[in-house]
View 1 (cartoon, rainbow, N blue to C red):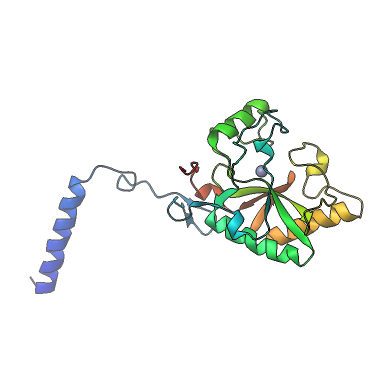
View 2 (cartoon, rainbow, N blue to C red):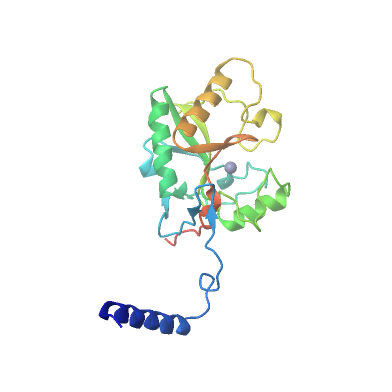
Length: 227
Ligand SMILES: [Zn+2]
């Protein structure tokens, strides 16, 4: 046998011996790794894209988390009052891009919901167990994965600007393409959607304020970082 071929055979035998010692994990059992979308994108891990405080990465971002107060559909605070707007780092970076574009139109983003811990998702589901309005906690929502954000607009000085509805309303006017009369509410909604689309987000067709990364189920359900 040729020397090179002998070396190859020896290393193949070694690899087979090592594989025989390993426990039968999903990959070795012949199950293909999970991929997403037509480009077959791989799953993302927490280490690839950690949950971070978005505020320092998005200059001027105003954070007013609806579920940190009792004015929400569960009628009680679901987050501690000092809860931060946590997002995957890649999501915060895209949000910063949208924020820069919006500043040119004298607007700033206000975050109403970012990463949502599992307990809060379960409380929301209990308050409104309607698939499509609230994600079933069994599946794990995009907010729980840190790849979805609920945002509105304010003027640069923080004063309110007309918008189609409040956060968390459920009616036909919350649809991203709801027909609105020409005016500032429609202009602001369309400006927001354009800026976030340009930064790589998709809007939820039923909620003009809810944006997420494409193929968001690639990301794992997140956990609140320990203080
Ligand atoms: Zn949302």
